[in-house]
Length: 66
Image (cartoon, rainbow, N blue to C red; front, side, top):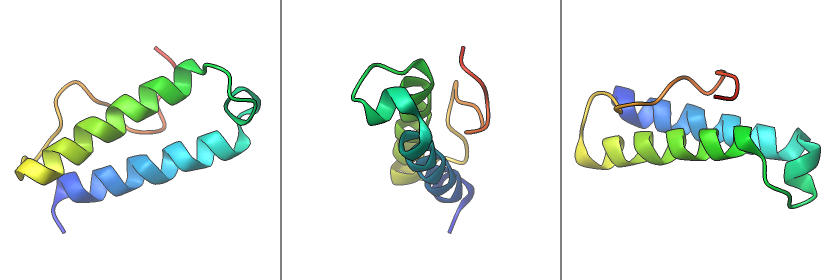
């Protein structure tokens, strides 16, 4: 497993963990943190599919809201 694949899995797990514990996410409301985490996950997933080593303009899943 390469770095991008590993980061995609980590980011996805963090997103799932967030949506399970966030009141706004659980109520189906808009959540800026979930939006940020979803974008980061999609970027890493795309990088993993294309074989890239890093995803541009993303951060670790532990980063706070923008």
